[in-house]
Image 1 (tube, rainbow, N blue to C red):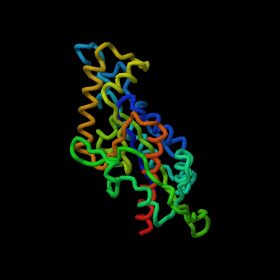
Image 2 (cartoon, helix red, strand yellow):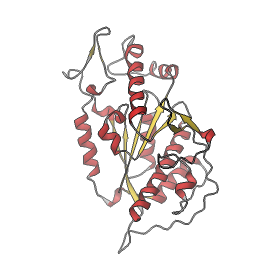
Image 3 (tube, one colour):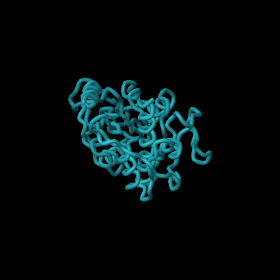
Image 4 (cartoon, rainbow, N blue to C red):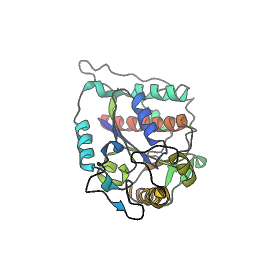
Length: 272
């Protein structure tokens, strides 16, 4: 069974760091990054911004999405047993990041983690933020896991037993949720936001190839981000919004907790 995680958001919001950290923490997982599918500078598909004499790299036509879809499909055809991640390994990853013990218990983990996946809304009111369209999303990761007990038993994969686990594909990119095919694939969808000021402070000190020309952030990057962000919030269900200015460990902890709960839910559905 596959569990597909999407990580998107503003430029420089930390989405690549989160995706790469997840990949490192979850052995056997697959990682597909949208930045690997930018078209070459001389591609005829690019849109030029006349006022800046610069390519608009912030839109879908700057990307080879057919190739990206093909790579994702190729990953999903992988059936190696080595890529199955036991639910206990997910819990261990949470423990490594959180620094405090969380234990897997098959009947309780889904509600005890208390993460919003779109299926459950049991989140304290002070931990919820509202998106522009009025829907709710998890805003922080201050989750109490100290009282979760441990009783998980995992089969060893031999004879008539099966590994209790999932295969994980992580898809990262600034426009992945604006692509319906990818958005529909994702079981967990995370969107990292920044304010304009925070975004500019980070973007202005990073090197790019080709480099940003003067005015590119104000005339292209930020307006395109706002347009695509609003499109996602309006059209894509169950997107969890995370403040990209949070501590990286806090963000990673929140995402790992959400993935662990979703994996548990999928395995419960499979058993039923």
